[in-house]
Length: 371
Image (cartoon, rainbow, N blue to C red):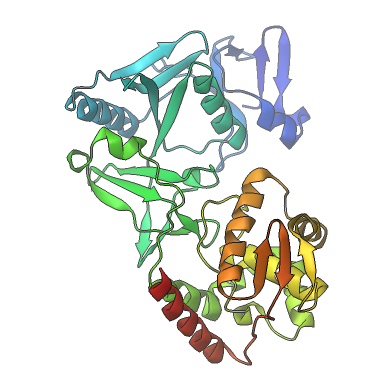
């Protein structure tokens, strides 16, 4: 159903643009045009936006699955076992929200939100801001399937792009909690991480509240990730990265032969791009616009990234790029001093993938020892 009433106004989704539809909120006062009964606005990823009638006995604002109900009661019981007064479905009329689980710890307020169904970025941010307005911190516990391959994990779409330094995932089948601390997004859905994993009783509330952001997990297994990228992982990103591919071909190589200095773990997911792709932007901008010995400002480099590759300029992106520059300093490609960069050494590009992999392996041995 694509039409509903909001007061005396008819909301016709067929007359709205996609951006206008994304601004509509899920609220409890939409009315069916025909039968005048309450309907819910839904805007997920699998179906186009629509209105749906509310089944009798189900909350209009938050229809929940059996998994959702089970997990929030499980978490509340776990908190109570630690002497913490946890309240399930705590209402906050002032912000028109119902927290899945609410508790206070050491004079601070916390809300646990259980999330499995897709949600827009605007909805996610609004919920965080609403709770922040009453001085409550949101702890997101995500549900859904997680696929593990070595030290990489394919996460549910709902966990992606939230700007969180730590991701909490609860597996209903095994009743286990996974804490992904500083996950490194090697692609738009896959992360490289070493999560703390176990049943709820293996953890305490401090494990959820302690944020060790800045400590990136790294060991020699990173070579497996780079090897995969060299041999086949880059193919699926080239269609949307034509500018980058063009710049590589001008220099006589494809993405599988990117310099070894490209593709190293840094914090966060600010770019929303494949890890090896956005780091290639940084290296190729330096190689294209400067000669060895040149000195330029970090702001100059950011301007070039915006012009050459349309890299979004925001605080989180800049922080991520600055973290990557530390790798380039360690590899001797650049020197950085008080906001200025000196181009010291041209990154090496090998003639074939096997030679590039040998160079990767050499770099990883050196880095693992330094770590």
